Length: 273
Ligand code: MN
Image 1 (cartoon, rainbow, N blue to C red):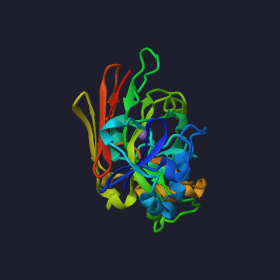
Image 2 (image 1 turned 120 degrees about the vertical axis):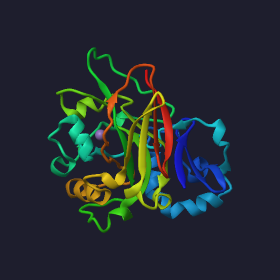
Image 3 (image 1 turned 90 degrees about the vertical axis):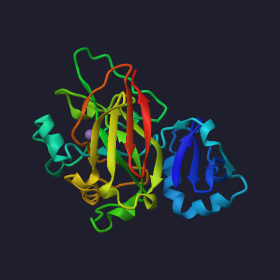
């Protein structure tokens, strides 16, 4: 199933039967603040989805006529792994590696949706790079999660671009500008991604293929990311983990179009402003 937000925070799901608005049947006010409705929906999903799909207030929607919003706006955490592909480490001449450094964080407010532009800050002379990544969405609360249990804690997956200003300032600052984490276009539930440890992720800038790699080449694999993160911090429904980028990162400039596509997950195209 696809789970998404649209038209200003309404909640929708899509399955083989079609696309549906579950905002009213689930009983959330899309205008309420803080916008944590999707976090709550993910936590409740297993117990409520069957009833919601059968509910009289669940209405079909025309997928062509809606505007998709960022599927998760206020997660508890947005974690990310640094250099997690050998060839990306080589191209950056970096001594960082996910298996030695662990995770870092991006500001949750850097999240932006499939129809939002990537807005570049005015920093003359500095390169701002795209990083094509798989986004993992946690489905239930967990601490000290083992490798063996890790997949049970995954709600789903989305495309994620980890935008970054290259340079020497703290990484968390260089990666936390507003719109520096395009995420979406929806969350695909884990049952529809049978082997997330073997899917292709690609990114194009202006139709030129820049990144093209498979998650089987991750240094720290998906179960280990969850194990490592949950040893430090309790993971909550809706938490996002960015898995790290493969080789092929490079600058984006105003006017560019960035497209990301991940096998079994989806694709989205972002304008750079
Ligand atoms: Mn990254």
